[in-house]
Length: 153
Image (tube, rainbow, N blue to C red; front, side, top):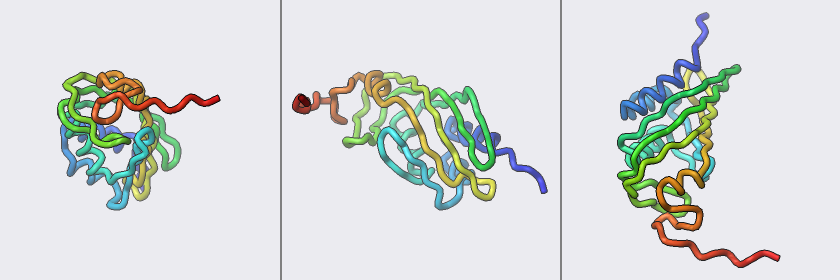
């Protein structure tokens, strides 16, 4: 029985994202596969998640810097770069396009079943993303300052 190179599948996933090929992305995942955007606390199917990022960053690209595999688990380190020219669904609502460039270091953890992605979890620094989009930590999704919580004593 041939061994499946799971790292090659992950590289294909990022190549498909860079080519904006949602059908190819979905073909690399199980039909019931879900991805979790850990900082935003959002779960979505592979097609939905890819489309969300592609809509917000149409010129977005992922550059893989490291991949480690063990058993049915693959961990990828990558740098995502793009210009925020479309709306991005964030944890407090839709973040309107800012026109700003962003560069973000990310880690994504994949689980496989039957030679296809069955789930993943994406980790990145939300504060860095919001700062690069000009929203800072004290901004809401609409870009307005948030009301500060009362001080804790």
